[in-house]
Image (cartoon, rainbow, N blue to C red):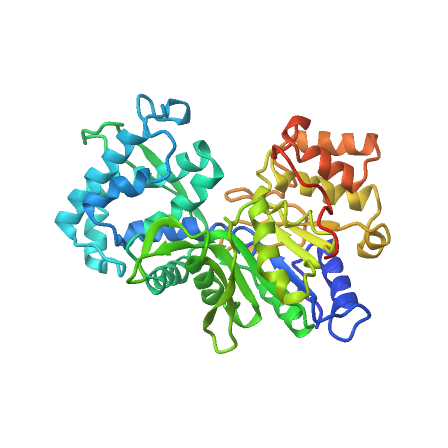
Length: 473
């Protein structure tokens, strides 16, 4: 089987089919150790699974957190709870004050509409609670706090923080919540929704508004691709910085389970009753195999890391590679800086597909890899065969349409939500950096090793092990 859909970018479709022709079942370089690794959010899916799940969790008030626990949950891991948040849009406010506002509103809602549970509230109560100003106070501020934590805290703090919303819930309860969220929002047309916090409520931080993306999809292209990989004997793994149960639910809800070999994702510790705690599981957190009967089975090896940036590389080496005689992946699928390391460090990579969000500034891997993809094609004249002859990974850029029910398009460029024209990059700076690559006739190695670093004036990393730094093992 090869890709046939007409809504792939031409060079992306050609490159993927070339990969199948070379490495697929019965082909010249087929091996039982051939596998690919893909990010999930904004790669497999269009828009973010964990963020969409958060919205649904708030709308249904599916929480296992008691009112007297909420503030401790919110402040868990925050390095400085008195940090001034003025530069992040909240004047005269800090995390301690913000968490007080959120916990106070949650306590009121719990008393009036609770007790809350992992199953969430019924439809009648849902309609009632969302008209309550205390729900708007709670929803806008806790969702804003997630963004603030992501912007102001280290990745070691911010990535696990989102998982703490699941405190007191079991694996199955988080899975069921997530599945219902995706099942509900997959049929919603894309829009940006704004929640306006109450102006007539006295609080420590004052009123806030919050805007979020509604709708989430997996395009038919991804289903075609994963099916083609399976029929060609190439295993597909997902490596995601979202919560494990959220990722498994997404794979199942969007009909990808039968094509997926397994998943690596973020895991929290549990208590003796199997309920999640506010503590990341570095020691026992493992990936899961997607079994043919539709169920999931935990792997016996633990990841021993968080799943972002270099952590994805570590997780792959600690788990997936052991399944394949310590061989690395032959292809990677990405969209952002969190995927850069695993999509550049393995020498085994023949092809990397970057899904174009067209909103990345030059200090992001999505922008850098997009620039590299255009440069490799138009300046170096690379296709998969020529890249391989030069012992290089081929990078290609796939566009999408974020409007309506969301889809991929036959272009390297993307149509942003509420726009109609295709957009290749986020700004003119991206083209200027391509010009610099041309002027210096840079190699793939020089581009990634130079422009990924912050001291280059372009980059997003303080340090980097280097392009193709992980050799054959």
